[in-house]
Image (cartoon, rainbow, N blue to C red; front, side):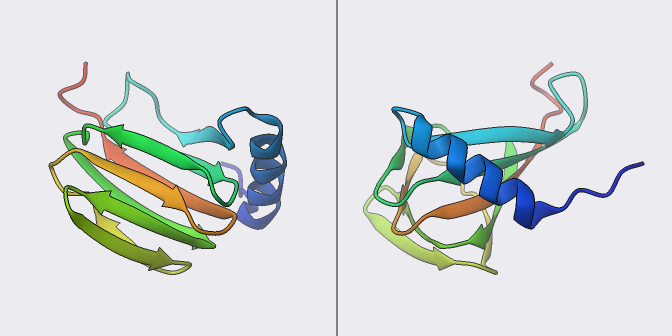
Length: 112
């Protein structure tokens, strides 16, 4: 059992995101494809994006820092630190309006 300091981890992941061509970096905090739960911290430097992709079976997104715009079809959802959303079962993309960090939680059962 280990306590993870998210603020320091977010700072670290954002620094790594700046070094990446994609402008983003992530680290899995809990689980993998062998477990029923996976939690990933995703950091995205402002102005970068996660291009449109399919939704996992069941997932939630919590913005820990910054502001993002989630696009689902024609709909745009503005989210900021403290916002939480169940990710819809549809293709979606995300743009970092500012430097941001998010906690993605995915129920992985069915992926195995």
